[in-house]
Image (spheres, rainbow, N blue to C red):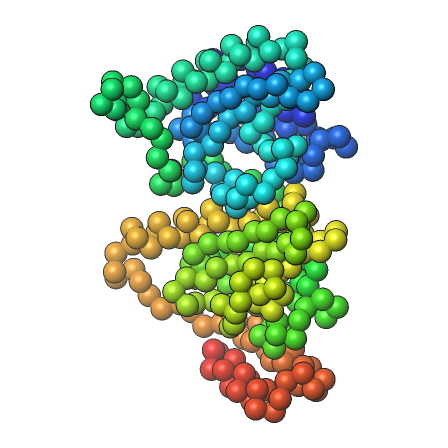
Length: 311
């Protein structure tokens, strides 16, 4: 196709195998869309296209992503407001005829893509879409760090780190110490929007690996005492920072899982020892908790011995 359809806050460029969505940057554009910048959506990542009346004299063209195709929508899990949906293009009502044309063109492209993937069904038509086996849309290149209420979260592409704040972290998190979890030890991420009550970001350890106590509780109450989670609050962990972060971690987790399946047995080697500086920093935090009376003598001795064993 190669044509461009300009709407409110975004522009869609239709290519032969994908749709390039460019989001405007401005004070009226939802912050998440501004943070996304632009995203290329392959036809195989979509399952349908809809066109419906919008609010106040507009029409809405929407592409429906396949389950499992986009780490951003997987992390969001249906929690985004309509205004922050990156798959919606809002147009003036007078553009409805033009929007219908592009919707039909895109539907035809999706049907052709579906036929190439799965052939024809028993009725001669394309087979229905199945969940994608891999991410077909790249994770946003948004921020790889943000401030939560109880700590700072950062991600370097291989390891997620939580550094606790004295002013917000629970005693359970201080006892566990700052956390560094490689994506190879994770099976997923749970994100609850900061725009909902008791929002949080939780890392889901794989096969019992990960932070001490990471399995304690579930939901927002558990997140407050879970060293594998950071909790949001008013002004902390905003959607445009924490959601792209969660999507990037999800993409890295799935990539690591794919490599594990593909790697030969001989490639499976023990992980290296912890950085001595990191262990020393955690022991220092533990000593401060001990002096403050938040950790007993027995807990302090046991945890210190455990940390020293990691050197």
